[in-house]
Image (tube, rainbow, N blue to C red; front, side, top):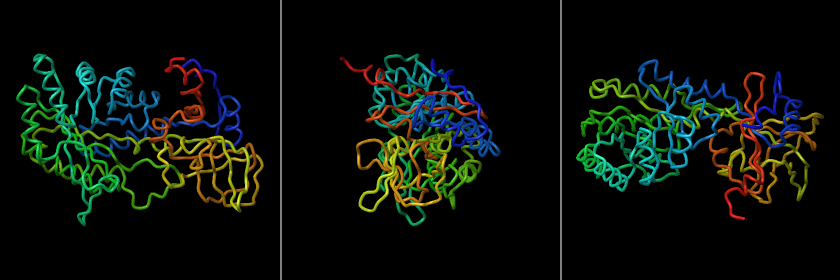
Length: 421
């Protein structure tokens, strides 16, 4: 990156002066990224499994955060790229990934051909994908195709209530049991062996019990349909894991909890132990959530109708673009600390009433030029934040006490480059 060498700062700790120094060089708001935390999280998750079963692979979820610097670290650490669209597939190829898992509900013929060319594992999601892949195989009988199949798993808690994401009774992804056998046979009939079984099922609670259900069902499918060519036993993602300082972790499962519930089942399976496929996990939030922090500068405090508003140059779309109601862990940095505490909303720089970064929090009476820090912003922020009203914020990587710019601030040329003027 042309601008990467323009930011050369050595700091002992993150404090008001270091934040202001970065602000003076690249402006506010900005993100800090801590790559060593990411490496630690990724390897800690893998090691939780590898203590008991060595053949475990991480497929890093690009959709969670596809910052190229982060994806390169995943590649160096031996992770596969887990992608769910043509855009993400092309990004993984451009970044040099030799191992790619191609998931997602829409795979057009051109995308499938690209995936086949780079020897990706293609986890099929619907019958139309089988139609397309079978036609490709019949047109190119000598073409090696690494195909997998995603199964539809019905998640329930111990009381029988659905735990599928958003409270849905049925998830929409994968092949239901009613057509699973027919779908497997269609692939085999044209000479496509099934190398992967994919059980990813998004839940509302991320509970350990879900992975017991997923694993049990996947084992039953392997046994029933004699998936003896299986290389990848892919349980998907959706885990709890790395969390920012200040987040309540009471009763939240650990990496080891997830590993144990899966391994307790598969290591007792005669089919699994006879074939010993790779277990694949697809971590996203669970390894990247605490890797990023966001810093925004205070411009003024307004009081309207008895309510205090701390106005900052950042935006809720940078820290929680899904606009959930929870307040993220946060801290303040002030050059002139005021002990008076006020209850306030922290509001952003867009012209939207919903641009509220913090609701009804207690903060010191901050002044213009002070800063607020938001933690836990590594997942579904940078990849989901739109070019809406403001330019995208820069990202600075922090290794020990060395700072490096890994994404510059977006500019008007970036915005206009895809349009005809």
